Each structure stands twice: as C-alpha cells, then as structure tokens.
Amino acid sequence: MKINNSIGIRWRVCALLFFATTINYMDRQIFSILAPTLQTTIGWNESQYGLIVASFTLAYAIGLLCAGRLLDWIGVKKGLGLSVFGWSLAAMGHALASTPIGFAIARIFLGLTEGGNFPAALKTIAEWFPKKERSLATGIFNSGANIGIMIAAFLVPIITLQFGWKIAFLVQGNLGFIWLIFFYTSSPSLPVEKCQNKSKPLPLKKILSQKEALAFIISKFMTDPVWWFYLYWLPKYLTKEHGMTLGTLALPLIIIYIAADIGSIFGGWLSIWFIKQGKSHHEARKLALLTCAFCILPTALLPWVSEMGMAIFLISLAAAGHQGWSANLFNLPSDFFKEHSVASLVGIGGFFGSIGGMFFQAATGYFLEWSGNNYAPIFFICSCAYMTAWIIIQQITARSISNELITNPI
Image (cartoon, rainbow, N blue to C red; front, top):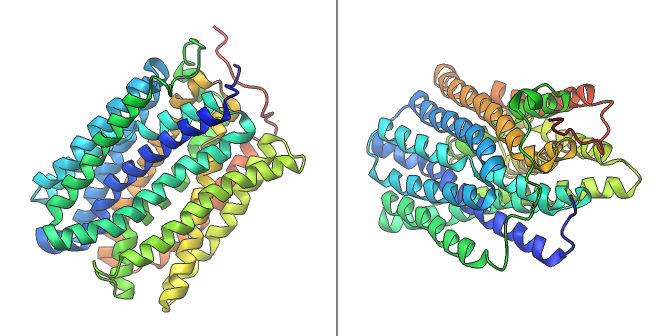
C-alpha cells in the first residue's frame, strides 16, 4: 500500500489520536485519583476496590476484542466515533453511583466502550505511516495517556474540593463530546481513513496460528497488568506508604507521568535511531524493548525506599520504561501483518493483557488485605515481567523477517 506523502496531514491525524487518548485516560484515571476519597465516602475495603478495578479490566478486555475486529470491518471513522461517544456517557454515569456495586456497573460500561481507542489508533498509524516512523508516531499518540493522567491529577482534586466528586465525573465526561465535534467537523479536510485497500481482515484462526501474534499476545498478557497496577494502586500506595493526601497527590503523579511521556516518545525515537545504525526494523524494535525492560528492573527496591524523592524517581523510571516498551510493542502487529488485520491483533492482544490485568488487580486487593499492605512481592513481580516478556519475544520471533508481511491467502 502506498503511504500518503503529505507529512503534515499524517501528523495532524496523529494529533487527533493523541487528544482522543488523552481524554480516554482522563476518564479512566479519575476513579483511581478519587479512590481514597471514595473509599471513605462510600465505605469499601481493599478487596472490594480490587474487584471494582477488575470489573473494569474484564469489560475493557471484552471491549478490545470486539472493537479490534469491528474496526477492521467498518473502519476507524465510524468505530472510533462510536467508542468516544459511548465512553463519554459512561464516564458521566459514575456520578449516579453510590455503592460499590454501582461503581462496578459504571466501570463495566466504561471498559466496554473505551476498548476502541487503541485498536483504532494503531490501525490508523499502520495505514498512514511508513514503518520507520510508526514507533515515533505511536510514542506521540500514546503519550496522550500520560498527559491525560497528569491533567486529571491536577484538575480532579481542584474540582472535587470545590464542587464535589460527582461534578468531577460530569466535567470530564463532557470532554469526549467536545472532541467528537472537532473529529467530525474537521474530517472532510482531514480524513482519518486513508487506506483504499478493501481486503478483508485475516480470519482469527489464521492470525492466532502465527508465532508473531503469539509473541505479541504473551507480552501483553505479562506487562499490561503492571500498567494497570500503576494506574489504580499507585495513588493508594503513595497515600498509604508516603502520607500523601488528595491535596498533595497531584505533584508526585504529574512528575511520574511527565517521565512516562518522555519515555513514550524516547522509546519510539530509540527504535528509529537503531534503524539508522543499520539494524533491521525487527532488530531495532527488540533492542528498544530490551532497553525499556532494564529501566523497570529497579522497582523491586521500592518497598525498602523510605525517602519520597527516591521512590518517585524509581516509579518515574519504571513508568518511562513501560511507555517506551508500549510504543515499540504496539508496532509488532504492523511489523508482521497487513494493515487490514492490525486492529484485530491489537484487540486480541489487548484482550489477553486486560484479562491478565483483571486477575492481577483482584489478586492484589486480596493479597494486600491479607498481608497488611505488604507491597514487596507485588513490586518484585512488576519489575521482572518485562525482561521475562522480552526473552519470550526473542525466542519466538528470532527468525522472523520484518519486511515479510503475513497476508490472507484467500
């Protein structure tokens, strides 16, 4: 497929994806920021919180699986628009909840609808960008996740302290509708659909039979739960272990997710740098993944760190490493598969990553309640997950050739 030569247009498309991802994570993150406040107001325990988080993660897994396949059939413009509309309604629906069950229901609807964002974004990147630029473009739009978390960390406490937590959910839910207005009014001159190839997506059986797909799926299953842990337990960890409050939590979270932003863009650029040094696309991707995995290993030391500054540094390094890892891992599907099947594989990988996250979050809640908030084993598991996943990727795809795309033989 011929890549569009207009550099300006494709980076403007990337900007649309960036803002969608920013809003996606703002709506997702508000719950964890308010968790200590809601725990006092609503009155749930650690295991109930873990189950609420797990309910979102399971719903998100199902949303990813369904959205990935749907997007390969109906395209990004329709699919992403429906997803943003749905998750904006679901985000506002949290204001109606008053019990743990009510929040679980709201999180389920949010998870089901948010699943369209990443398959849509990665399908668009595969259609609009040449291989050498995809990791950087992915790093940029993926950095919207961290921007969203930072904006939420800054605004949510202010809105909550002034107007209450219900208004915070309502305000953030409305941002998606604003994005939709821009998305559809700008699309006549800035089309999201570029690909004119009407080929049908590969059958799921064909996709799942490929070892490259297996490497992506296993890696998502092992590393996505760590990011879920950071998103939903980090505010509680800082509150419990380092005495943070709703009013003082914003600055540490902003620092951590600025580092994550840097890591996302740097990780995408690093792959390009390795290519310029003479490495193949596939070799460059794996070297960048290995570099990011090393950044995450020191988090095993966190439970023995009492100084706030050092704790924030280690968490920031891990967050940067994860986002750099994601910027490269997300491009493995487009390295090996034609564009019309990318969203399907991203959805499948995201499904298994979220399933792993669901079990990990539920287990974290029960373990912390049972152990009296002993985070040491959890951080050890988190620190080792990426290096283990990299070894698996290396073994499974050792003989893969990145410029031989898997196509539908039918």
